[in-house]
Image (cartoon, helix red, strand yellow):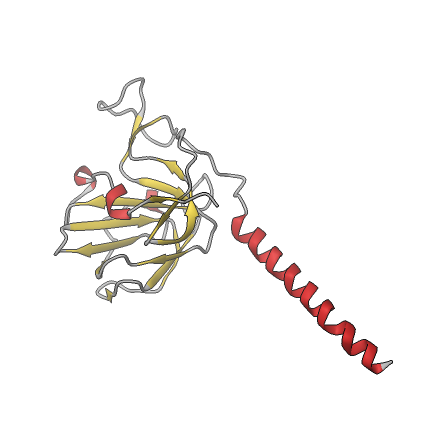
Length: 193
């Protein structure tokens, strides 16, 4: 009888392990019911900056998203979005694509959430604002090495769910210096399996 119980234990343990993996996969792929996509692009992108493949919610430039005041650069009273918002589950890890210096985010307003990150790379000539982070593992003045996980995604200050806002600016530049961050992010369409 004892031998029969032991022989049955591995299949039960294997089934429990599979159930756990399936649950974790479902949680990782879970959609946030608050996500609204202001783009026709349904592509999932990978990037050296974040884990997984995710969709763009709001692209750079003129947008119909309701969060922005009408801008003279845009038609039909549309607003201008100075970055790219990428939908991703809360807690998604962020990694440094380059060697970066963490800069105090004091110049950033509340639109970036209560815990934005401002990163600088003088050699490559950019500042990168990342809004709506949860936990930041680096402090102003720290040098973050390439490949280091430095923060996680969140929904703080984001009415449309968990996502990250990526905004490329000139070194020490303000909002008026923002340019398309897509190349910096190295967004790559996920290949279909």
